[in-house]
Length: 150
Picture: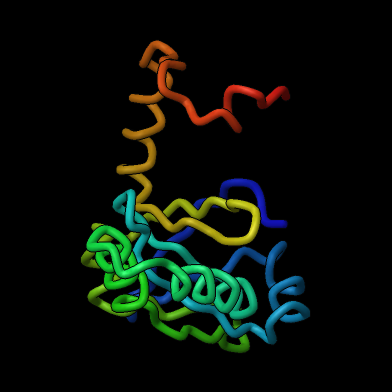
């Protein structure tokens, strides 16, 4: 289970160094074999260990051929890129992935349970501030969220 926030930098070649605290777990879980793709609902990237990717890919493949499901599959599969960690724990983010997410030099990486999100740091900070200013709106929440008690 991946959690927490890390500030990172892209190097001149477009690589990010996976935080040390995750490297061992990623080596054990997937031998450093990762898949990076675009998040379909936000201007960020998803980075998944290969076994997590395989699970998600199977779920996507089982979706109907409804136009919205096809769009989702096209976005996620079409941008999926195998990215192996090198010996220094770095992962190369391709130019199309960096462009989609609007990534500059400074990044923010969020642990999201079974995956990571990679954001441009300024974009993430702006989104976070927006969400903190908004009044909570609980209308229309899925039942699973209405029943959630923390």
